[in-house]
Amino acid sequence: MEIIIAPNYEAMSKTSAAIIAREIRRKHDLVLGLATGDTPIGTYRELAKLHKDEGLDFSKITTFNLDEYLGLAPLHRNSYNYFMWENLFEHINTSQHRAFVPQGNTVDPEEFCAWYEEQIRKAGGIDLQVLGIGRDGHIGFNEPGSSFASRTRVKGLYEQTIKDNARFFEKEEDVPRFAITMGVGTIMEAKKILLIANGEGKAEVCQQFIEGPVTSQITATALQLHSYAIVVLDEEAASKLKRREYYNWIRDNKHIVQKQIGR
Image 1 (spheres, one colour):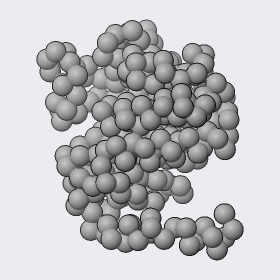
Image 2 (image 1 turned 180 degrees about the horizontal axis):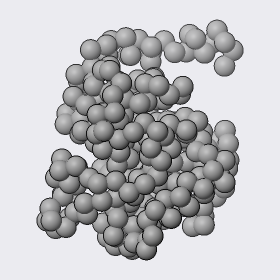
Image 3 (image 1 turned 60 degrees about the horizontal axis):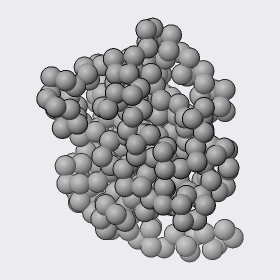
Image 4 (image 1 turned 90 degrees about the vertical axis):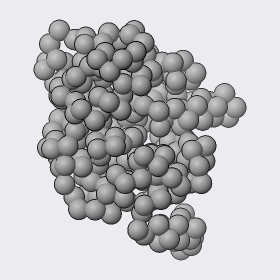
């Protein structure tokens, strides 16, 4: 994994947006996996700005969201579909027909999950998958104990996840107890992965998934086994890393390697 430590949330958002923009410019029909939550809002804001100010073109990309609450209709204010349109899709020139978000109110979740996997395959697989991380180390809604071979499926949510997400609802009792989520195996098939995290509350789990042992109890540790994973943290989220000086040295001297290989 490449670890990039940014000084603050704004810088983290700019850095992660620049990475995504670079991939879109390299491949105009990029297949992009997307995440929701507080963390990527700044990144999506920066992408919308790049579209407005620099003409970053999203018209040919295809997007697949990681997850959705089971039982919520797409237009529900707490659905992740609503979140994506409010925070990104309405502000760029994406095609509605190429923006895939799991359907929380599907009448047959198992059949839908199989269909979602098939759409990813038909698109040629995900080129770049954007991830956040939960305080218990989950990616997507792959809670502790999820198999690294898991595919898109319905997953029950841990109590910690429900408590963490209660701030988006009127009361904790309103938080759905189940979600449709890409599996760890699905995520790991992405050609490239970008995980972003911010805040002191994520510091411990970031240290664990970056520097700790690989374990299904912290599903983000699977990224240690990926061939191309970039992690962008702000200073607070990086505050408990034991090898942060090394990560910073690599960041500051990366140009030397790029020069030597002629990039």
